Image (cartoon, rainbow, N blue to C red; front, top):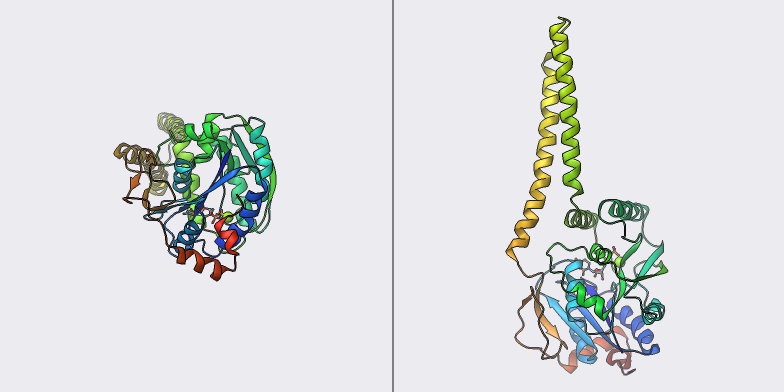
Length: 351
Ligand code: UDP
Ligand code: MG
């Protein structure tokens, strides 16, 4: 049986050596053959060189290099597209998703679960702000997107081959993998774990990226914002109607008193604001339809290593590499020397 591990990476040069050093012993302790599918999401630091060296040293390491930063969700998509395992695990590069959980996840997979999700029961090393915004995010998502979404479950999950094949059929541009998984209704096992702080480097998810991610999640999975603007419109219409009745009544009973222009200006501004927000929301959805209708690739692969010469390139991707280049041996030797990792660990002679 083959286990694929999909790892999206963006500027992770600081953490890659410790990732490999933690992951490989776990992989050698389990009864599966393995492949690591690294997806370099347009890194600007030394990540690319490190991955090239790792792939040269260990043929179990597949690498896809994006032409630029396409985002975490696109990188996961690419990894799933090119993973060939019987079971496929998606995990972050920063060791916040502990490799030690793999045997337990595989055990659940062997029991027949199609998806095995790791649930964060603690989140050490994350500030109050990140934890509270994350809690808000999960509760909002459950209400707005899908009540089947599991709280505190990120992208650290194992999928059966059948589940991966179904996931590959989702070729939408604005992706929220957790929503897709919830929507599918796969037979799911949950494994709780303690989320450690990042092993090295800094978070690649600043606040603005998290906010954009939350908006993608809501707007690509639910029409709730449109419904809210409709309800808001109906409520203001009712208020306007009853207020007009009051004005007419006062005019008829001659108790009408002039209310000055300022109240009119306030009303005008409020209603204009509401209308513009509503138009903006509709615009967001129209823009999504427009982008989807162009049918652009979900990501562009500029370079690939150890993918295999006869891969079937999936639908809706850009493929810039003519063949499957093999990096030189010298690069792998330099990598193990520079990072103090035994050559055996890098070459993966444990299989
Ligand atoms: N990542 C990525 N593309 C991005 C941002 C992040 O591939 O645009 C990767 C990153 O390298 C890491 C994973 O996604 O492996 C999760 O990112 P990070 O750990 O920075 O997020 P956090 O845990 O802080 O939410
Ligand atoms: Mg992280």
